[in-house]
Image 1 (spheres, rainbow over the protein chains, first blue to last red):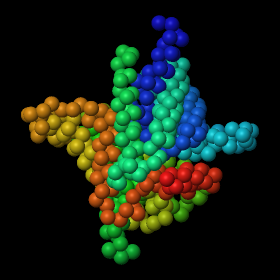
Image 2: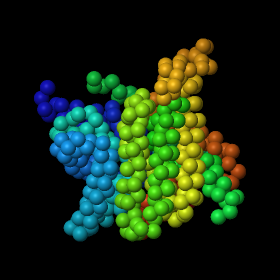
Image 3: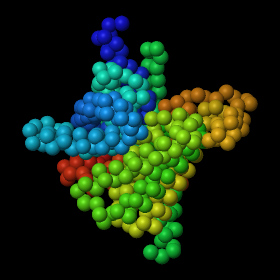
Image 4: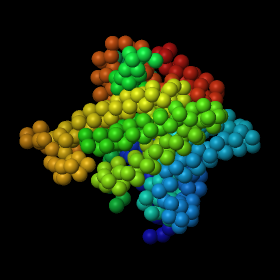
Length: 196
Length: 247
C-alpha cells in the first residue's frame, strides 16, 4: 500500500475506531471537564493536538536513541512525564512572549495538559506498538484530532442538556454527562472493525 | 491531632470524600480497569501503594521543596514510585501487569495522587498523610471493586472470575446469572463503563443526606492543579459555572 494511504488509514482509525476518550478511556477528565461550550472545546482540542504531536516528536527519539541503547528502558515513565511537563512549560513561555494573541485563546489550557493522560498515553503506546517515527507522529496527530472531535460533539450535546430541570434529581450534574458519554461511545462502537 | 480526627482523616477518603464518586477524580483508570473485580482490585491496590508512598515522601520533604517547582517535584516522586510498582508487578504478577497494560504507567497522571500530594501531603504531618493516602486509596479500590462487580456480573453472568494473582489459576467464577441468561458483553466494553459509573454515582447522590457535598459540576475545586492555575483560568471556570447555575 502506498505511504499516503497508510497514513490516511492511521489518522481515520485514530479518530473514529480508536478514539481516545470514547473507545480507549484516555483523557476522560478534560473530555468531561472542558466540554461545557464549543469555544473552550476548540481551544482545548487544538492545544492537546499540538502538545501530543510535539511530545511524541521528542519522546520517540529519546526512547529509541537514548533509553533503549543504554538499557534503561524502565525509566520510560519518569523520563516521559518530565519531558512532557517541561515541554508544556516551554511552549507556554514561548507563546506568552512571541504570540500573545494565540496565548490569549490557547495558553490557558496548556497547564491542564501536563496531567492529561491522553498525552502520556499516546507517547507510551506508540513505543509499545513498535511504530516507526512517521507512523508515531501521525498516530499522535490522529489521536489529537480524535480527542478534539469527541470534545466538540460532547460540547454540542451538553449545550442541549443545559436545562436540567427535567432530569431526575440524582442524575443532575455529573451523572447525566456520563450517560451522554455512554451513548456517544455506543455510537462510536459502530466504527469498530472498519479496518483490520 | 487527636485520635478522633485521625480516624476522620482515614475514613474521609473512603466515604465522605470518595475520590471517584464524590470528588470525580481519576476517571480514566476507573472506567478502564473496572471490567472485572480482579483488574479493579489490582489497579486499586497498585494506585494505593503509590499514593501512600508518595504521600509519605512528599510530607517528609515538604519544607525542602520551593513553592514554584512543587508540581514537577511531586510528579517526579510519584513517577519514581510508579516505576517501582511497575517493575514489581512485571516480575511477580505478570498476568495483572498484562491486564493493566498502558494504565499502569498512567498512574503517574492519576489526578487522585497528584491531588492528594498538592492538597494534603504538602500541608500535613507524615502520619496524617499516610492515613489520608490509605483512606483515599481504599476508597478508590472499593469503588473500582463495586463497579467491577456490577460490570462482571452483567457482562459475563458470573462473579470473581480470574487468576487471582496466580493464587487460583483459571477460576471460572461463581455462576450467578450465566445459568439462565448469557452475559451482556456491552457491560464490559466502553459504553457499559460510562453507564455503570453514572448509575453508581447517581445512587450515591440519592443516598447522600448532605446535598451540599455533591459536586454539581466539574470546577476548579476538585482539580489537582487548582493552586498553580492562573487567575484567567479561574475566571474562565467561574464564568462557565455561573452560566450553568443561572438555569
